[in-house]
Image: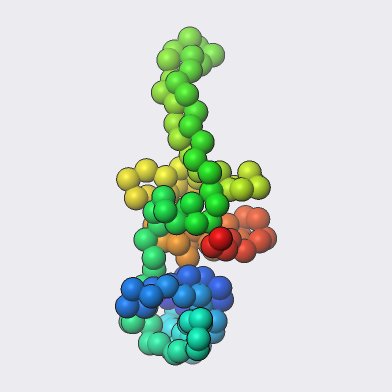
Length: 133
């Protein structure tokens, strides 16, 4: 269940399969959402917190945010050992990088499971909004 501290205005959430940005959050207590208003293309609606869900992060969503897949090839390290390469996703401006494997993203030790979590972390680290293209 989402908490008021989990989401921000502009985060993308899912309601019955429809994805829309958060326009308003009403909360009487820090961790309890009273109402959330989502902006649909035609009109805005108010939903109870139990009706909303995070959008699972996927490679498709990373592409929508214009992240680019970069693959580091295998290489010989300073000790002469063969080190297996890795792949990671880099933001368009190359200022943000994360690993994504088996449906889970990692930024340092921080695990990211949902689109709104990625949006929030990106904003916290860059000061800019991560928007779908």
